[in-house]
Every structure is written in structure tokens, then in C-alpha cells.
Amino acid sequence: MTWVVWVTAVIAYGFAVMQRTSLGVMGLTAAEHFNAPASVVATFMVLQLAVYAVLQIPAGITVDRLGSRIVITAGSIVMTIGQVVMALAGSVSGAVLARVLVGCGDAFIFGAAVRLVPAWFPAKQIPLLTQLTGLLGQFGQVVSAVGLVAMVNDAGWRYTYLLAASGAALAAVLAVLFIRDSPPGVKPERTDTSVTQLPHQVAEVVKHPSTRLAFWAHMSSNFAGIVFSLMWGMPYLTHAEGRSTATASTLMTVYVIANAIAGPTAGILTSRHPIRRGTLIEGMIAASALAWLVVLVWPGPAPLWMLFLLTICLGISLPGGNVGFDVARTFQPGNRLATATGVAITGGFIFGLVEIEIIGVLLDVLCPGGRYTLSGFRWAMSTQLIIFAIGLIGLETNQRRLYRIMADNGVTIPTWHEALARQWRVVAQRRR
Image (cartoon, rainbow, N blue to C red; front, side, top):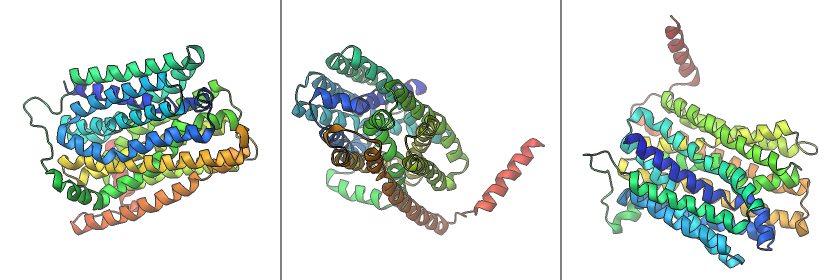
């Protein structure tokens, strides 16, 4: 039953990712369908992500109070309605309503899925399974980038989105049938805080450095992937770098595969070196920032191998957000875990949606009339480097605060030299 519950939650999250990314991978197709400029289509995604981000804390509180089963079911139903509206929409206003509904339903899925992991699995398995929950769900992005993109060209807009809606409906049915909030005979761990005390509880969660570290971790490791996978990745690869749709779809798939490899690796490293989780996150972020910097300053179109390297680095950095969740889990009680996770998730999505809109506005200015150029795209995409810097500063600041709290509680923080020497001794003993 344990694995059935978890697999069902992962499937529900995968369908949620498919709904979330279904517009971004077809951004310019959507512009043609609704006869709207790039900035308007970007606004669809910004509004969807804004709803998603704003609802994260309410979603976390709801999961802590009602449990994952009810929340995943309700969220999937709302996404189903949103995708049906998108399929039938003939105007910009209809599309806006559709993306608001998708963002609303999507907001409740991941936090509820992650909440099930500590309820059903022992502590040693939690970091790895948290990573696996996030990365396996990302294969919904592959379905969007490959399946939906091909389908919309062959079968048309309406049929494509109705099929996407059926996936969300299936997730709701599976959640009702197979998800349970706790093992048989175990009382679910839920908050009993009164409604009037909720603001105080949320404030306590937000003030703790572990929650803030998780916020900056998710922000700096996920915002670039959000921008790339949900909106501007496909247009950049096809219109700026001049790659075919098939090549761009392959690169998007490589992004997901890199995440799939990096996620379990990050989970294992998190379990073995929990004190160094912040440093692990910083390394992931640095990989993405450096890769974007090289691509953006390259003279002329970037070679294909470099674009592969970029998508690999973006995929490698994505699990950094889940490492941040593990930091929050370590320092927060179980009945506040979903709330802390919700606070953290707002980081990547708030900054991601702001960046999506910034890029859309700059493209309209630099590439008037939809005449997209490599130079225009590069100037627009280069604004990501500023957000990388902000995230790294926030992450390092709160990591130092957390170290001071740990030291005050008697936890010894070894230097890197001491940590590596200890690991070397362990390896040497195993070889004997």
C-alpha cells in the first residue's frame, strides 16, 4: 500500500506538470491561435504562475488541515475544468480564465504529494523519495514538449487540450481510489490551530531561517527552469538559435532527463551530508548561471553541444529546490511541513513569473512586430543573471544564520577539510 500511495501521488503530480506546461511549449502557436502578441501570451503564463504562487501558502495550510487525498483530488478536478475551458476558448479572456483555473488547481498538488512522503516512509528514505517525487512528475513536461506539440499541429488546438484535460480527470479518479493520508492504524498528523491563529503560525514558519533558506533555494534553482520550460525555452531555441522544432523538443527532453539523473544523486548526497545541503544547492545554481552566461556571450548562434550543456545544467539545478524542502523538514514540526513547503515554493514561481513577463516585454521592445532576433532574445534572457545573483545572496545569508542556530544547539559544523578527510577515511575503511 505504501508504494501504491506514493506512485499515485507522483502520477497526479505528473499530470499537473503536463497541464502547467501545456501552454508554454506552444507559446507562439498560442499567439497565432488567439491573434495576440508575445507579451499577451506571456501574460497568460504570468497570471497562471501568479495564481500558483499566491495560493502556495493557503495550499500548504489546507494540506496540513485536510490531508493530501482531498487536496490532490480537488486540485485535479479544477485543472480539468481549466483545460476544457482552454480547449473551447475563442478569445483572450477565455484563455485567461482557463490559465487561472489551471494555476489554481496546480497550486495544491506538489505540496500535497510531498506531504505524503514523511507520512509513509522512514526518515532515511525521505530525501531521496522527495527528489524522486519532484523529478518523476517532471516527465509531464516531456509529454507536453513532445506529445502535445506534435498533436496540436496534427489534430488541432481543441482536441489537444481536451486530451490534456482527460489526464487531469484521470488523476482525480486515481487519487480517490488509492491515496490515503497515513498508514492503516496511524492517525494523520494534522494541525489543529484555529483560523484566528493561522497568521501567527504562518509568521513563525516564515521567520525561521530554514524556511527562508528553502525559499531562496527554490527561487534560485527553479526560476530559470520555470522560464525555460514554461514559456521561453522553445521560442528561444527555435527563433533565436534557429533550431528545428524536433531539435528543440529533444533539448527540452534532455532537460528533464538531466533532472532525473541529478534528483536521486542530490537525494543521496543530502542523506549523507545533511550539514552541507546549502553548499550543494549553491553548486547547482552556479552551474545554471555559468551555462547561461557562456551561451549569452557566445559570438553568433551557440553550437548544438553548448545548448545541450545549457539544458543539462538547468536540469541539474532543478533538484536544489527539493534539497531546500529537506532543510525545512528538518527544522519544522510535521503539522507545519506543508505550510513551510508552500512558503518555499513561492520563491521560484514568483521570480519565475516576473522574469517571464520581463522577457516578454523586452522582446516586444527589441523585436517589434514579432521579428525575433538572436540579439533581442539574448538581451532579454540576460536579465536572468541578476536574479541568480539575488538568490545566491539570500541563500548564503540564511545558511549562515542556520549554522549559528545549529552551533548554539551544540551541533559541530566541520570545515570542508574536516568533512572531506572524514569521508576519505570512510572510503579507505571500506576498501580494506
